[in-house]
Length: 393
Ligand code: NAD
Image (cartoon, rainbow, N blue to C red):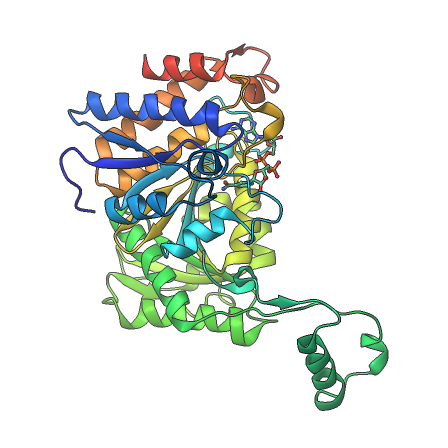
């Protein structure tokens, strides 16, 4: 992404523990930028609780416009108040600005306790479609005209036994589009090429949901097959049924393969080193990226970012953890490493590497926040601020 020498970066500290981890992350990111000869001009913007305080709105226009204009932004977690008029502030923000890919790297940091036998083999990046699937929120409850129509359709036209549907039903729609699938897979492939990764795995349940998840995979394979030369990207549409070593991939090409989502949760843990970049519809991505994150340290560590076309909004995976809010306890690593992803997207590779190395060095030296200290006897437990200072040092 082409960014100015001294970019303006809108930042939302966030609700709950966002008030702790937001400023801590800002400090570390700024130090990494300065240490690599750059400057960031932060622009504090508001949403959630702070949006309501300053603007009487959850998602003020000023915030959306700032992120839209500057194209590079970072946010902490937001709590969606009950009865806000939309399902989630986060989803609203991603959809308003068309951040269609939610990207989560999952890699092992030395010194982080893990339940895995070989956690150091974990180095995956998941690309989760962000705007479609059951998250589109198209659903109806019992008693609505829509449910009545669907009930009639199921009973009369599809000929199902009435007893299957004689109680209340909830109905949801799962839209998956060609455009949405293709742009997501394209982003994942481009990321793999740019970061020298050798494989993109499409994760779906197309064996059951043929016209949604199955199509996702077919459209994804079309991108791989038609939009790139074979020696750069090699589509392996039969990979579900073939042994890996029987697939003849041209030297140096990124292989695009497919896996069924349920099996993938197993492979991810049993054959961790076989996977690199994963691309999938929204719901699969939700489950799979959380499960992957849990293997290498959990929510306090797990970073993320939303990619759109030439724009990025970095945000940690975790929520506002109200129980820990304002206590200088929460782990800012997830937000710091989200900022690292943002730097990477901006092309600031040296600053991104510096952030990762400094975080890893701090954790492996035994200076950690309460969540990791609980799992490590040799560790020194420090607060959010002290931890951030140790990283800067
Ligand atoms: P959560 O991620 O806020 O917290 C779950 C638990 O994980 C916490 O109790 C805490 O023990 C631990 N945890 C999370 N982040 C941590 C950190 N940085 N350091 C140490 N421990 C950490 O999930 P939740 O309790 O389900 O949700 C709380 C609120 O956050 C809800 O209102 C939810 O809507 C919102 N939420 C927002 C986002 C987002 O902004 N992207 C994401 C998820 C949840």
